[in-house]
Image 1 (cartoon, rainbow, N blue to C red):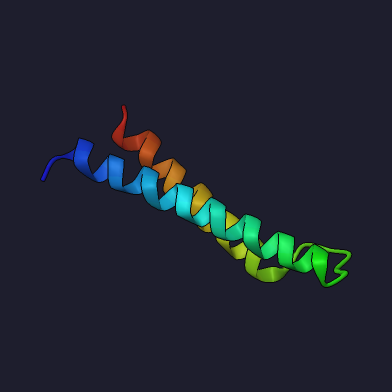
Image 2: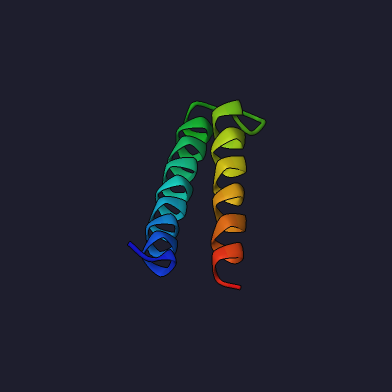
Amino acid sequence: MTAEHIRTQLEQIAEQLDDLAMSVLRDAVEEGATSRPEEEKKLTRARRSIEKAISILGE
């Protein structure tokens, strides 16, 4: 396993986290929420952390 392979896997995970966060937001809007759900905030933080790791591996 190489760093590039791990980087590719992390990119896929980041995309999945983004998709899930968007789904949570859509559901919240449909339910009439007026603020970002905590679950979406947590997913977004996780995605950003993964993106930092991707950046580090790309150096």
